[in-house]
Image (cartoon, rainbow, N blue to C red; front, side, top):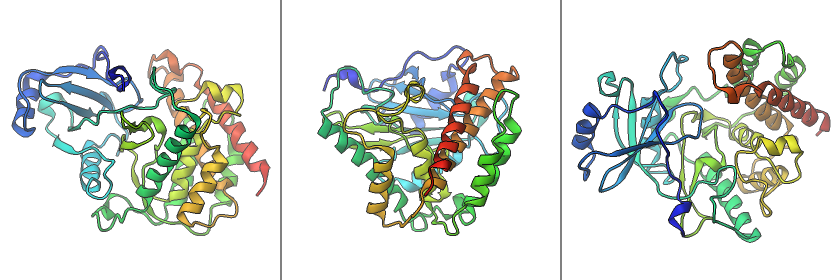
Length: 355
């Protein structure tokens, strides 16, 4: 495998530099086998926590920290993210090994943690340049990805001492009430009110729910693939949103990002992972495969699909709200209101489809 296909960090964004004068000595006391001064690069993906690669002569480590500025209550909790992964690692090997954590603001100005760097390929909007998989390999990658989500949902979170990370029971109602409220609060004049969709979700909540460990941002571009066998998953990243929740709602979240080859041009323009490739399952095939492998019996999956799409609309609208009210100058957010229209259109389309 060509080294150029490995996922690599890039130049640190202006204003987001790491101060090494205190950090470097602190790290050397806690991470074995590093010396000298690291080269610092930054991963550009994601719109939340800041993630850096520190390259020492002996090895590379990854540092994650909260962004600068005011944060919502409970958001960007680096300590929680560190503890969750540390507890999960022994029973879910795709998690990176945790190396160090600090809530001492005097080191880099905020709480942070450091973990091992899993070297491999990350399938972002397209597969890494120079890597071509045939249809059979693409199907195997797709299957392995879904299996790794199923494996997560089957983790005994109580035995892993993770019962305390969230409330668990009542998750479905909390999510629906919460996203209905957040969307309404973030609404701007140029997006639909979404009241019909919110009412439908409230009226169609399943009578039962299962509780398991959920990732809540499970996408192919949060997976690390083996360089020698790109169909093999060796890492699952970005555990910021992980909680105790309903596995079918977690699957619904993933499907909201799943753009398949037959989708319209607008959907293709929003694609963030290579789910369009020949050999990838369709959304319905993903649902069928997941239900068959897990034994869940769901007569009508529409609730979970609509929930995933509406939740994504809420996330996008919250980002656009900040741009609309000049709380950020990031021009890439300028037309997100159009995407919100599209996601709500998709919600209504699924609702009208019938069971």
